[in-house]
Image (tube, rainbow, N blue to C red; front, side, top):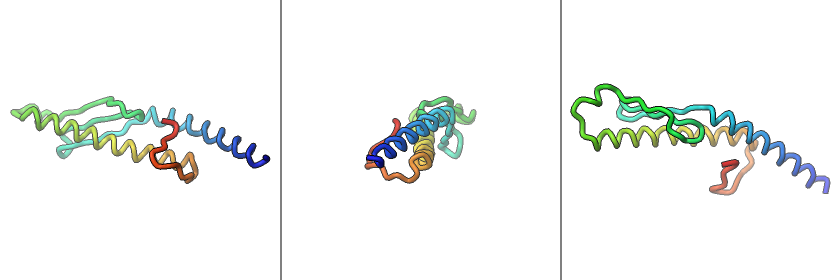
Length: 107
């Protein structure tokens, strides 16, 4: 039973480190771009959109659908970068512990 107690202690320590990591990540921001940088979107660590920047040249005659596609692409670019960053940070906390597919901690 000594191993069980040690495992429980390690699990609690990992949970504490993950909570600290989550707080740090929530404060970070990741930006994505599309259209060669004419549309930029910034997300926070929770994946919420914080800022959008549009190059003034976009306001010249432009199809609305094109602008919508550029915004969507910039958001998706930022989200992919955020997911990769979160995975890197999670690997640091779990020490390479293999989690089941689709299992995300603590979120």
